[in-house]
Image (cartoon, rainbow, N blue to C red; front, side, top):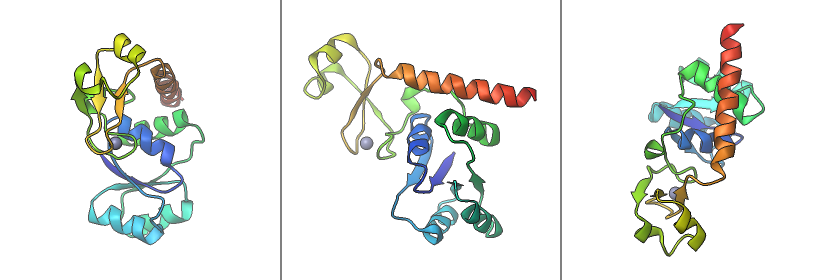
Length: 161
Ligand SMILES: [Zn+2]
């Protein structure tokens, strides 16, 4: 699924990219430009701004008003509305920073870019062809999985009620 997010949703943008979704994001776009890009590139407009949401809807744009305050709440909403999967397959992930599909990288390729300890601990690395950042599933992923399971719980509760 392809999205465009307003300037308030930087964090959600990164999340969606990690989950494998193509998300256009720029803090420089005004409301008119957001609507224009959404129409031109058939993207779903995600916004926290009710007025923008309403305007987009009257112009026939597929838009969604994000209500939740935490990452987990927002992901649960999107999962409910657009069936966004709350699991990560990193071979499908896009760079959280530049929205480019990540490529697998060998230890040799990343050796000069990551710390020795990291290189010794992990075997699976990904590289962004745009910005060159290196990614791996390290200790920080505990938080990512934590947020995703929190989102799943919220979603299940909503489904029950
Ligand atoms: Zn990148």
